Image (cartoon, rainbow, N blue to C red):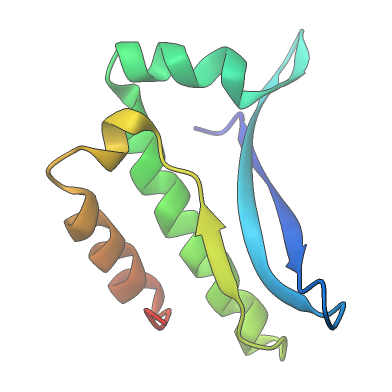
Length: 109
């Protein structure tokens, strides 16, 4: 998954202007085609079943990054992660979320 890269987008509170959370966004950095958006590679990953392992990796990476920012002194922020349809309806979703939180030390709230 070395060619999959994260971008983090802030989510702002419209009343205060403060950052209210972060959304993890996944992109594929293709060596020849450049940055490929999810709508181009997620359907293929869903079809061939790779989306489950990619989804676990995304959850784990996003949670670890959130904890790393907190350890650097940033405020506690929520982290939004997009789930594929297959991942959302999969039998292991709650187990995967719990595992990512436990592994990273991120608080569930």
